[in-house]
Length: 354
Image (cartoon, rainbow, N blue to C red; front, top):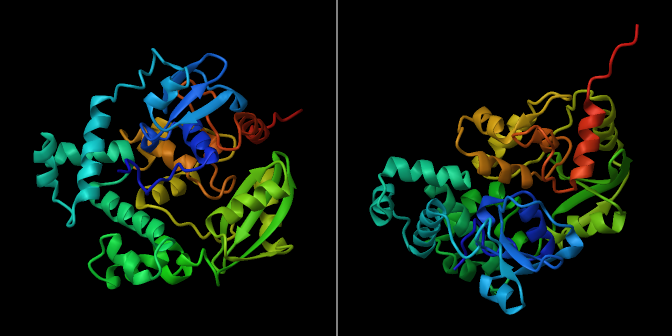
């Protein structure tokens, strides 16, 4: 049984490393991180200092880590699940198993909380209401099933949709394409992309007919193209110049000029709110994750806000690098903390020499 927002969202080591660095609350208990140099394993969110990537090995369960000779961390106690996380897990399990989504009253009764407190706790930990989670999980299950089944219709019913009409009404907004196109790995969808050099490394910018849908940072074109193809393996990827998109991004990055280029962002309602809030942070300024949560009107959703930063599909133009730890120091960043430091240093106001 999956404990996470989508079925098996941490299937690759790259995704697990990213979730670990961003302290993704949805990844707690989904896998465990073992450090070869210390022979200790931890759960996601451990307060210990993050190890180097080359010293990390991932395990699906504590038992597997221990069988390989690792000891449980005494700080995060990976064999123990915090009480509030355990409640959220139970609610997720109830939502995933139910043929018809239970009401807040039914869920509250099952876990011993009032509907109000259940809603608040669940949203604090996941960034979603139970209803939004159920919708997203069912769609995630469909995405997994549709690649395995011989027909879209069969996948629709396997995912728990009573009819195809409900799925098709939301498919373009949530999948970015029709279910049949998604089943073919995005076949028939056109994404144009271009590479550029920047002060933090190589960039790839992916563009749909609506605007920028992806902006990734890396060390090589091959690495970035592989990331771009990961979700849309069968999409029509067309390399080009895209000066009308690339130059505004570079100007925005180097000169902090306003970016008016359209974006094509898809995510949960909470993620979209966080990404919009990030765009309101001026260059040269930072916010803590707590301040970001308050900006979106949910002060207790700190971990969920951090998770939304980690899921940001268009780095730089949605400036998640401007969010720092409580002590004001740069913390986890998908593209590496050193890049985050460099961006923040570059954006600092320059002193005026008289």
